[in-house]
Image 1 (cartoon, rainbow, N blue to C red):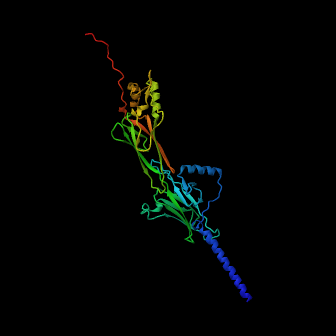
Image 2: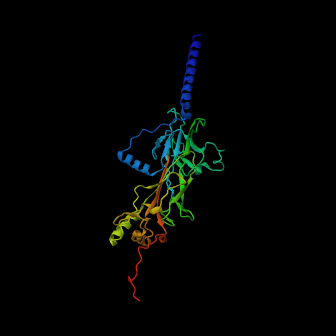
Image 3: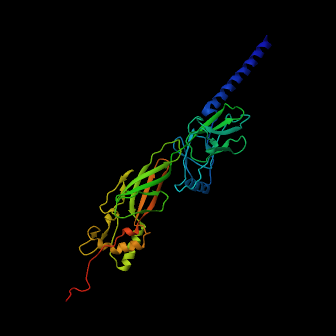
Length: 368
């Protein structure tokens, strides 16, 4: 009888240990989708940190669900979500996207088989944008080795449906964690339509153009931008700012006129000429020359008052038609990205009319 009691005690103790072990494993694998992701605590030499910062400045930042930037080339904890941003410029040149290296820690730390399998997939394969597309054409995940606990996530191009990265235990496939991958909306291209008040066809310029030609300087313009956006899963809005400023050619012209003793005309703008929002115009009594003045006794005079005082300036402009007096500047600023640029404004040389400054005869009287 005593032996039976001892046997029951041993059996009860054994069962209790099994139950406790099961609870511990269940609690460990329940956290964050059953795979726990922790950051690697490691110090970098000062020169490495500085170099890393320089690399980050040139790439396309990636942010986590809290809006914090995720460092590239350094293993980090797998967040619940990440958003990729494009560093591609408007000139069509492809720029590299930052890659993100994720670190997974499988618990318990003494698990017999800690190998992981990494994969990417569309969150909703039936999404209209995702249908018929291959997810790895847009996002890839590459483990550092077979079964490794680190893997590199790389964005290849814009995408318009949510993607997820999954790390799953190879031994226990139901133990896994997901990270949602998004792409922030960005401006892919911009063109500008300028309708001169003088009539005729609108002048269309692309954001990548260095110059645009306006038929005449004696007009005002109505601006209508046309913006093309990338595919995206995260919406963004852009504050638009458009202005016309004095161009580099103005100072060149002033210097040239001073050398030949010409009229010291000025086209200096007291403030940049703004377009307020899209599809809006700015009025100018004499078009682009509204701010032009020429000095003479009793002056300065504006073009509408004494056009002949501008002859020296117009003669120079006709001979230097590729020297821009004005420039169109644009800046569109969003939460995740922004674009800006400048386009020089050129005018048809024939629009610079040399005004008649006077009439005289070769003699004042005739005797018949």
